[in-house]
Structure formats: C-alpha cells, structure tokens
Image (tube, rainbow, N blue to C red; front, top):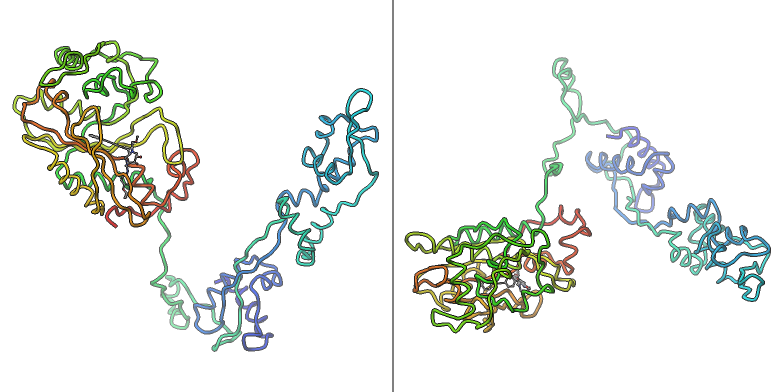
Length: 500
Ligand code: FB9
C-alpha cells in the first residue's frame, strides 16, 4: 500500500467535517500532497480494502489543458504576431512573406486580421506590407490565462477559437470524491501482503494483520499472440467443413495459368473476365508450363468444336492464351486441379473438398471491395448428384453458420449449369444479404478430365471478408485488412461464434 500517502490522506480527511459535504477531491489532494494522482488512487484502493474506513465516489472532472501547439504559442507567441514582427517595413513578395516565422498559418491569420495588405501595384511586383506597426498577442495572453487556471473565465468565443485552432484541449479526468467511512480512523494499521520466512521463524506473523486474498482479482493478461478476425472466421469455417466430412484442397499457388483458372473451367478465351481490367496477368514469368497435352487437346476441342453433347463456343482456342500466367481470380482453379487429379485415379472415389484462400481481381476498390479477398469454396463429387443435393447441402452448411432463412435465385456461371445465387435475410441488418454463388459443374468441364459420365460435381463459394465484417460490425474493409488496421482492435477482437 502507498502507506505514506494513505496516512497523509487520512490526516487531511480528519480535518474535514463528517457527511457528504466534507470530503476531498483526489485530484486536489494529489496537488496538495505533491504526489501523482495515481498514488492517491492507489492509496484510496488500499484503504477501501480495509473496510468502511473511507467512502470514495468515482467522478469525472473536465479540465482545460494546452495542446503541444498551444504550449509552443505560449512560449513563442501566436504565428500571426510572429509573422508580423518578422515582416520588414518595406514588405516582401507574398511567396517570401509566407515563409517567415509563423509560416502560412501566421500569414493567413495576419491577413484575416487586416494586419497586412497586398500592394499589387508595387514596383517589381506584388508585395505584402504591414498595415499596423504593433499589435497585442491576444492568443498568447489567453493561453497564459489558461495556464493560470483561468480557462473558465475566458469568454466562450475566445475558448472556442483556441479549441478550433487545436491550441486548447478539453480533458476528462477520472477522479474520486473521498469522504469518511463508518469505520473512519487515522490509526490505520498497514496490512501485510506477504508471509516471509522471517515472520514464520520468529512467529511475528501472529501479531500482524494480513490483507485478505482478493479471489475476484483478474490475473494479468498473458503477453501472447492474437488471431486476426479473418483468421478466427477462417478457423470457424474450416471447422464446419471438417465436421461435414470435407477435406482441404492444396491452394498454395497464388500464381496460376489461364488454363487452370479459365480454360479447364470451360470459360471461353474471349470472356470479358479474362481481360486485363478484371485479371492481374504476370509479366515475368508471363508464360506457364504447358498443361497435360492429352487433356489440353480435349479442352481445346470442347471449346472450339464442342463435344459431349455441347456445341462449344465455336471460337478459336490458342495455347498461348491458355499459358498466360495470372494471379488466380478464384480458388475454383484449385478445384479444377483437384478434380483432374481425381479423374486420373484408377477407380473413381467420391470426394468432399474445400478451400479457403486468397484470390485476386483487378476490380474498382470501394468500402467493401479490395483487389483481393479470401474465397471459401466447397465441392462434392459423386455419382448422380443434382440441384436438389446442392440446395440441401447449402442449407446444411449455412445452417451451421446460424443462417436458416435462405433464398435461391437462378444465376449464370460459365462453369456451372444450373447456377444459383444464395441470399439470406439478415435480422441485424434488416435486409436480404447475398451469401455467395453455387452450381453444378458442366459436363464440358468434367468429361474432358476423364471423370465417369454419371459423376456430377456440385459446388459453392463465398468470401471470408463479408461474414467477418458482418460478424465484427466492420463497415470499411480497410479497418479489417491493410496498413490502416488498428492493431489494438485486432488484439481486442472477441472469439468468433459463427452460429451466435
Ligand atoms: O461472401 C459473400 N457474402 C456473405 C457470405 C456470408 C455471410 O455471412 C454473414 C454472417 C452472416 C454474409 C455475406 N458474398 C460472396 C456475396 C457478396 O459479398 C458479393 O458482393 C461478393 N462476393 C465475392 C465475389 O465478388 C466478386 C462474395 C465473393 C464470392 C462470390 C462468389 C463465389 C465466391 C466468392 C463463388 C463461387 C462458386 C460458384 C460456383 C461453383 C464454385 C464456386
């Protein structure tokens, strides 16, 4: 316990009349005792632990303080006065005048105060000349009064002007109003907080009062790492996929070939999404290794001539275009690679796969979109699957996110047919929210890989950022990712409960 301060506090309190009127403000007591306010707060906490020795009511005290800029003006004078006093009687060209002590702020204020005027017809060009010879530095004088504790006596208009110029700060101080308790006494015995070997050896502990254990005291927060909210949500979604029997696909290549990102997914080489304004193409290395030749030949054929019951796009298909390196625009590229590996197996075996990783799109940025995001994707490959299985799977997946009120809307994707957009009514936001997209992969995608004809693949995708922003109440994605993120917000972010 800050024993000295506690005893001094009790002695000052003893001189105060009993009852609510008689008491001490902890801020004034700290000033009177010549100690830091925190020392008085520590003594208050120690005395409160002894029982009803004192009463301490928390309260807020507003106080005016000079800002660092205000202290500078108090020391050196206001910028406008410093500039006027530095301006030679013959004046200066405007560009030079605004570089005098006091700078552009001083120049603007001095002009506004009509302490200067601009002589546009001066020989040799416009010159700034003093209009007055001497002025009172009222700003500096007002700051002197604040320093003397007379802020409240300043006219409101003067105080507002100092605040507007960020020379004066209104500070809220937490303090205590301290009064005598029902068991008030100045003879307070210091309580021991540690049982030492010497006390035990000599038996002196028997005569000493000990501070009771405070079992409700919070332990010190351990210095540890912190998971970013995105990674908290990723962990929750990964858990949901795993408990649904899904296995995670490898997705560690951000750089992908156009072949796997577009052609293998039956996305035509003339599709606008393959344009520079949507996709980040690499300059070096610009070209990816050649895809498996036999498979590439089938892809080329199904694009240019059709096949498997499809008429194809009847457009030219060039390997050069397919071998352009890019930053993958979706993790469906990883799904294509996984399905190709599945098709290469001796015997078809049904699978449930998922991925959660970064994708890149050359899109216009706004409060909710950056040029990259994390895509979440799931797929099931099994004989005889169809739209009904997909819708049931979506209900199960989003149900585990606590989302039960779903609506499905027909949509279009080059690689799925049918395709379905997923919506949910969000009670908190009071509106329908788009949850993602889904569909049944087309035969033009599956059959060139060599998958058996009756094998179907249903798949769906969403982002990681959108649910995270909604869950954590973040409106601007730059508060979630990027150089402007407040790390304290990350440290303080609560555990993620997707179904809560
Ligand atoms: O995540 C999205 N919305 C969402 C998801 C969950 C959620 O949970 C809240 C806690 C309650 C809330 C919202 N969206 C998908 C929808 C929109 O945000 C959309 O504006 C942005 N979309 C991204 C792509 O935008 C260019 C989100 C991203 C997205 C969209 C589609 C897919 C993947 C990501 C897909 C797919 C797909 C389709 C068929 C087969 C395989 C994959």
